[in-house]
Amino acid sequence: MTIAEKAVLVTGANRGIGQALVEEALRRGAKRVYAGTRQPLAHMDGRVTALTLDVTDAAQVQGAVEGVESLDILINNAGFAQFDDLSDRAALERHLAVNLFGTYDVTQAFLPLLTRSQGAIVNILSVAAWAALPIIPAYSISKAAAFSLSQSLRALLAGQGVSVHAVLTGPVDTDMSRGFDVPKASPESVARAIFDGVEKGEEDIFPDPASEFLAESWRNGASKAMERQFASLVAAAPVNA
Image 1 (cartoon, rainbow, N blue to C red):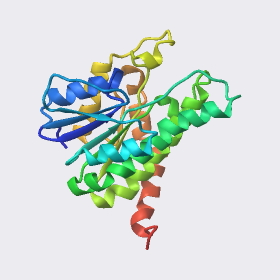
Image 2 (cartoon, one colour; image 1 turned 60 degrees about the vertical axis):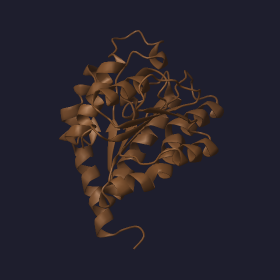
Image 3 (cartoon, helix red, strand yellow; image 1 turned 180 degrees about the vertical axis):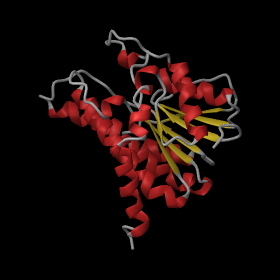
């Protein structure tokens, strides 16, 4: 998969990693970049098509599908993070609505286009999917669920020629992580590493120094081996058989 001459859709494209992904896709020669945002977005590059897209709004998701002619790469970047202590169920539901069900709904909506192009799904996750960050537990839970979703989709869609990439980010210098006093990678460097990983066909992408040290232990570890073993069951005994 190369980015040049491809049609790319980025959700949450108005700032942070999403904005950097839009710019990096353009730099790599994408023929069309669909920028999904909740608020109107203007861009100087004629290859950018703005889409009004709140991933929790079913009507907007369907409207976005109708505004996209063809699609090669879907990047589920829209996310929500808030400090909590798991005492408020509503806070957990808000995180799941965006980070899990938003990713699921957008993926399902655009799946026919991606199947047609034998394209790629890129889910922007977090190392908190593996080890919960207790000061943002609802976020951690939602990202863990989205990681499991990514693994499941990867196995289920492989036979249709659609690849699924999980991006495990560490701290990135965005509004979402403003309250964390730790070293952070720039959104631009993370966007470059994400597209590098997609072009190399990496299933799990570690786009920054804080997450990169986990890459080798994950790729050669027991959990990844088990994922591959479980994925083989899809071919052996399809769910819809």
